[in-house]
Amino acid sequence: MAVACRVLGFTKQGFYKWCAHPVSARDWDEAHLINAAYDVHTDDPEFGHRFIADELHAAGLQTSERRVWRLCSQQELFSHTIKRARKHGKKPGPPVCDDLVERDFTAKAVNELWLTDITEHHTSEGKL
Image 1 (cartoon, one colour):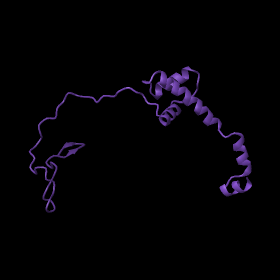
Image 2 (spheres, rainbow, N blue to C red):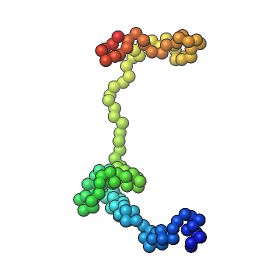
Image 3 (cartoon, rainbow, N blue to C red):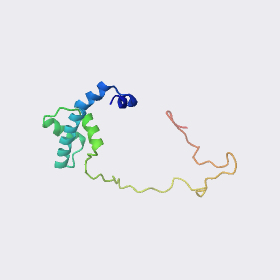
């Protein structure tokens, strides 16, 4: 054992301390918290991390919303609500100007092809 600890860079005392308690108290608490969050999420899959945190507080588990977010992200406990794309009912209007380059954006020389309207410049004072 001493040779293995020396090769791996561990002290014997640290190895035996780890053997006595291989799981830290924080990991143990997080495992219980993940289990409780998973139970809440299974009961109502529409719950996101904020509602899961509220339910955990109601159940008597004291934890921060940020910690619940981190654990839910690690375990991929996301809300199952469908987010639909918003349709504003607007269709694109007619082009502002004619397509003078006919979608050919190559220039044969410097300053030959300009792809922007340089007649107006928006500034803090208005258009110039």
